[in-house]
Length: 209
Image 1 (cartoon, rainbow, N blue to C red):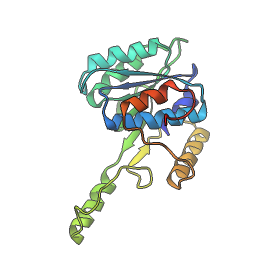
Image 2: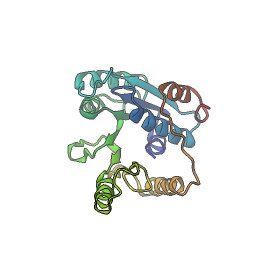
Image 3: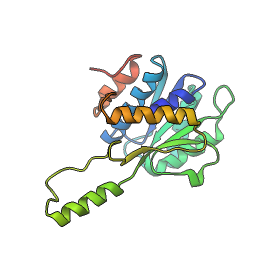
Image 4: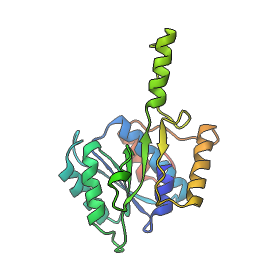
């Protein structure tokens, strides 16, 4: 969903993914992002950059790397990095795109709208409350430990954050795509391995086999 939003927002046809480390969680989100963006524009260009190894709190490094991705032409940044995302936000706020216009930022996990200076387009937000509720219920019923608890669109533990910067028509289209993913009409490949993610990003059509 974030990839669809990014592809509909970019002016340059160039997106950026900035991560603090190459871990499965970030690979999965980046893989979904690439598939969503390419579903809108198969020819969209995606720049991928890693700040460092487990660089979750490297604010300065995040700022530097994000600026380099903007310099390469990206005008929408999808950033994954815990505390380091504040450096990504700083870069977006202070660095214009190549065309002189605004660079947008799509966050993950949380909701930073309270800190937004007009650059936070959205976030792949996690809401763990349904999982805690399910765990407590299973504890009460004596079934805790017999199953896993997944974050997904169907149980609303993963949601695309709507900000004031997203128009009604774009949001309606994205929510229809969300429903189609949940009911199985649209399939999204889970990309866990970094080599598969990089192969996907290098292609102009679809995920790697």
